[in-house]
Image (cartoon, rainbow, N blue to C red):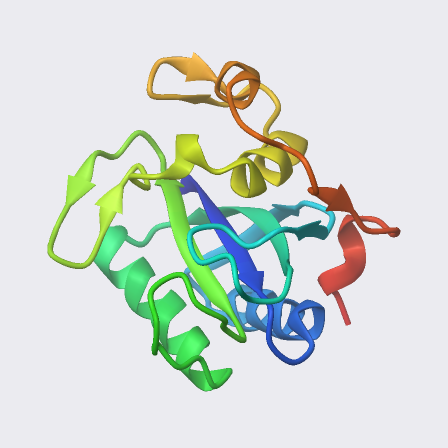
Amino acid sequence: MTTGYLGLGGNIGDPAATMAKALRALSRDGAIQIAAVSRLYRTPPWGKLDQPAFLNACARIETDLSPEPLLERCLATEHALKRERIERWGPRTIDIDILLLGTARFSSARLTLPHPRITERAFVLIPLAEIAPDLVVERWPLPVWLEGLDTAGIVPLDGDAGWWKD
């Protein structure tokens, strides 16, 4: 099994409920085990600013899937939860990004690992650091990457990491 990390987010409908459904669906897949999930964070939009705030979280998984089959599972889960890809960085019901998959460096037309913008996004690094405080990405630990990022407006919601369970 390989350890991987997923980033989840959404800002349409009930993002917390949708992300919980996504994690439960992925956990029912025999090839994916959810090992840890961060708390939920309310975060300002990134990239396209004229839209509602997001809810974001990260999950640590264990899987025997290679990058492309894992991407297929994530995209199928998004589709089942009515994700429509209309506008890059625009509003969405659910987004599931593969951030890292072991030490794999992978690039295809559909997927790049590590995620090419992981170190630029505080809304990813803050929940990721919660579940993997010692994780090193591109030769630097997460706190080093966070030092240079704007973390304003990223607020943990009340509750614990069990928010996604039935």
